[in-house]
Image (cartoon, rainbow, N blue to C red):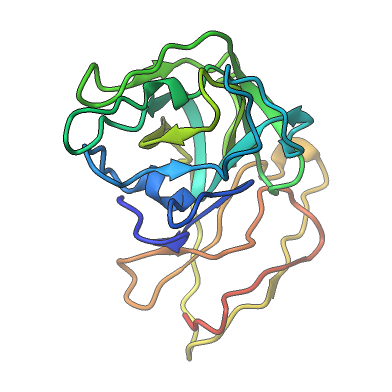
Length: 239
């Protein structure tokens, strides 16, 4: 799915900063260039000319500019593909030195507690015109996550530019149960009762809503951490 805003198609993108209109969703819209479509962190001031980070932002305990995405479903990542910002439209200026050089990728299920899944040093990421980016394999590929964050601790220039980021993996699958209501309602909370033994308790799950029993939308706030009662918000949408 190609995103068209920072909150579109069930996906939510955020970043530590951005320069002008170079919003984080532009790193997830499947447009590679050449042209003016990419995420760029705020600059100058965050990186030295040699790419060493000197700013104050961090994620997961790692200093660096970051870009994050929340999926409308859970994903077990098998690869992360990053493509550098492409050459300028006139073919003169290369931007690959602004691609991530040293970086980490984190996964989360609440957007607050982050688990490192990838640690890369001295990456040499190319643009679409000159190689089509680079894929990186996480060192942890056993867990499902709904949030992913990329933290860039060093580049080869004084900022970060990224044309595209792609998280590749297995979408959560499993047994399901559904209920049809007599009338449409806006869901504000849910309660799942635990089994007597934790081995029988759902560990990874999502809650979806539909109005036609065909197209299913992940409800924001539904969690894979089972508690007695969780608050969620459908923003007034009824199902």
